Structures are given as structure tokens and as C-alpha cells.
Length: 202
Image (tube, rainbow, N blue to C red):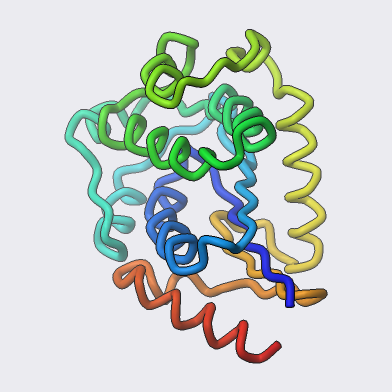
């Protein structure tokens, strides 16, 4: 039996932030399971996050937003650079990709770091001893690696028939299962049992 986990997300999406603890729990329980982190680059500098959204996320999940982040909500979000960086990390240092993603989420939602420049990403790069090329640090366009990731997302979304994000998908052999993450946002550890049941069916 072959099992893989796919996580479709955006680093600037509060619901993606709320769903990351579920991914952490699954990978902790199944460290041998291949993980694919797919940044969809939804935010392009033309959309901000409403207070209604963050209130709903805090009510329905275990995550909290810092006051500095909440004070900066009116700024339009652009996740292009973060998408470029995560695509590079996933391809070049995949063993660190989940840790890097956790750090980026913390930087954005706790430290109110918009991740719009190389300087914004410098702490993450230093802490994980990364050496991404200069093309990663742009808001003008997605890198080829990021575009390939989005193409992969589009193919997965055709199969599951939804473009909603975030999404956690479990692939077992030839079967692709969309896990209902909404059921576990308040109790992230409980999703491990759901994965266990799906694996037992195969």
C-alpha cells in the first residue's frame, strides 16, 4: 500500500493557518508518509482579510491571531513571494518544508510579517540555512516551480471537484480522499484516527 498526503494552502489564508495543525498531527503520526505541500498563490495584492474571517477562524479552531496582525488586516495580501519560496523549498530541501511552512505561518499571523521582500524572509532563510536564488524574491511573477505546483493543484481540484482552500487530501494507492478538515479544527489530533480508518479500508 502506498499513501501520500497533499496539503493545498495559501500562507496568507487564515483558514490555511487553522488547518496546518492537522497536517502537523498527521505527519507526526505517519512520518513515513510522503507529504506534498502545494501553495496555491491565491492572494495577489488585491484582497485583504476581513475581521469577520479572523473571528470565525478563532471561534472554530485552535489558532489565535496576534494583535499586530489584526491591526494590519486592512493591508492587501500578496502571497506570491511566499509561494515562490515554498515551491523552491519543497523541491530542494523537502525534508524541511513542513518546518519552514510552520515558520512562515508564525511569521505572518503572529509577527504580522507580510513576506513581501527578501528582508521579510531573512529570518526564515537564516534559521533553516536556506540559499534560494534571487528569482524567488519577487512579487512580480511566480517562478516556474511555483507555476508547476499550481498546475498540480488544478489537476487535483478537477478530481475532487472543488477549488476551495485549504484542502487536505489522502492518496492511498489509486484512490484520492478529500479529508473533511472542518470536523477537526478544534481537535487536530482527532484527524489521525480518520486517516487511520481510511488506510484500513485499503
